[in-house]
Image (cartoon, rainbow, N blue to C red; front, side):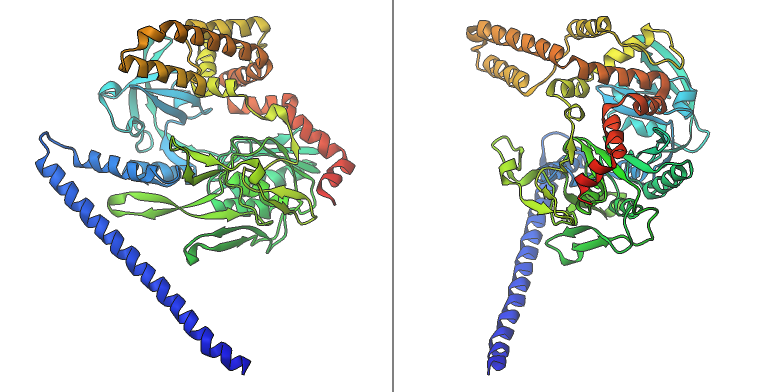
Length: 545
């Protein structure tokens, strides 16, 4: 009787559920079709009737970006050139100049030169400002200028650039460039190996495995894996890197979506390299996405001690979708969850403040989870290290100096004023720091802190409303007070800022390899990691093993 009752009444309920889903889908489909028809009609009439000539491609590009801007920053549209760059980022291989470049106003700025690649061989240095490529003046070229420096191997490109306000010319011969996932590994001491994992392209796990096995051959009995500054990449590579340290068939990450096919559980698929070797993972506020999968999973499985500062907090998963005419949409399809069940997404893009900014999950709203051994961990705001280090965090004033190129521009001047020290690490003194502060004043460096921007916006609005004269004295007093506050912060955070300046100086003289060599002996986070690994009792106590 009970069985019959269940069959009689549950089947219609299930059927009605399917009808509901079907009806919902039809309603969504109708609404989508309706909006597409409206937009198509509007776009056609606008381009046909507008008083001036329009650029349909430019209008559409802006329309697409405006639509996506209302979602999260990871859902983006790629034109043909963007698709090519996206593929390069994932493979780590391309034909080009071998340098990190950014566009600023009408110039391409060389941010970093990679050793022994075309830009290095042509004599380029960080801080050089490219103003002309071939016959193209960048001031007149509004497209992606970096595409002008791509081509087949051995292509010769004539370049005109500014260095310390002097015009120079050079010729770059393009060559194959491979961006390594593991740009450096070495032994810190007789028993401790150090691996830098800088990005998660499709060779990340392979390169990490090779580094791990080589260090073990050299006698390493414990490992420091450095994920600081690693913003992520391919999810399956994160799973495979975890697989180096945990057994086959271990759940590393799950993804959950409103679409069933995007709900997946990712497990380790291979035999590991070493499930017992003591492991410390270094993270900071710029460790994101795949870096958080690795650190979060190995923390949940009590396989590694996490050291540093709270990670970025990106728990969203994207998928590239090919569109027509070689364009592409990278769309957020799901959230990922670590083995304990936590999602560490920090920003809520579905609930924004009055300024349109995503709200950060407050610590009081974090949920507690347990690792395999019963340790308490939390969701909601990135991976919190087992050992949090104050020096691993970046102060607001230091962030402003990095973001607005205060340190970068000063070191550019410093490099050309000082002779090459050879293999010696430059000594950045207290007198040098005073010179740095004077440089900021001379260049009228703008920190653009939230307070400073708010003050500037207030004056701009006052000018617009023609009341700036009445508040000019008060404005100047506030600005002076703010500048004094910023100078106080420069003094208060002197050691942190000096460290950042010195690291940039080392890169100029000795490339990335020199910076990593410097880290081995001088970096406080690495020293702390080694001390944890040296104390077996403390290491096991942290992990409850």
